[in-house]
Length: 387
Image (cartoon, rainbow, N blue to C red; front, side, top):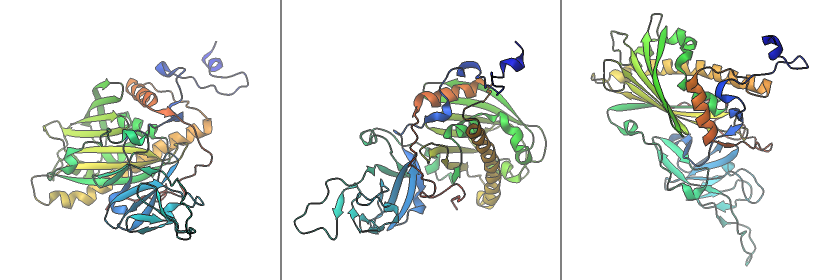
């Protein structure tokens, strides 16, 4: 049988051939993210005192509000009365009033008042679902899974984000793709050709990687090999004013469901910068993800130098992100057009991270009624970058 015959079905259509260890595996793009973790759903600064804001997690619409005391709460974004979104409502002290009939809810989701309830009549026994909430690193985290597991599930630990020796740049962007494409994009540094106009020519050498039941960690040596480089890239890598270009050891880790990157100049023992990222599905089909990222940069010894470099570093990171978004959204469009994953992956590292995401995820059961993008802010074409 010729190769062409092998790749063509009886009707003449192309038949995708799964490769390597993925033969017969469940399509990763049909696997949902596990809900029993803390996920960021908004920047703390975007939920102001006595204000309410819409958010989402995998088709679950969430109303975030900050009470008069400054406490953040998260409720199911629907009134138990007529199902009108509570994110349209009004904060009243420690409670949230529905904009339609002013039914009022406490932070635990219970109904506290129905203004026109007849005397002697009982309030409905059920209110709406509430979500456990925590705030850290300038982000509002909710626990969308089993609330009984929230207390025993730790938040991500990012000691450098709390350090006075570092400064944090926050990112908040919507990307139209399944969260798995984002994990693969950051972990697979063989795509540096995509960034040649920003990073110059980079030769990424895989030094090694480790895989566990919930994690994959890869170590690369980034060796510059010429070409024009964005000035912000050098400043971020602590190359200094002179722009000396030295190799960096870059460690990238998917620790389900989060991802981190740490860059250490070969001549140093300290990281020049580190990145923590969470990819939060927005819609029930999980084809739209919101990226929350914390880029933590070590302050140089020269006072004020990082402040002056900040706009250039910001510009550089935006350029890289735009290129990566273009690529992963193209991957998602191809999946949508083909109706399956025709991917021909050859890199063992990516096959391993796919297995970690697949085995730790949950079956994806799309809900046709769940259309969150137009109801939840921010939407795909309305990025909300941190200042």
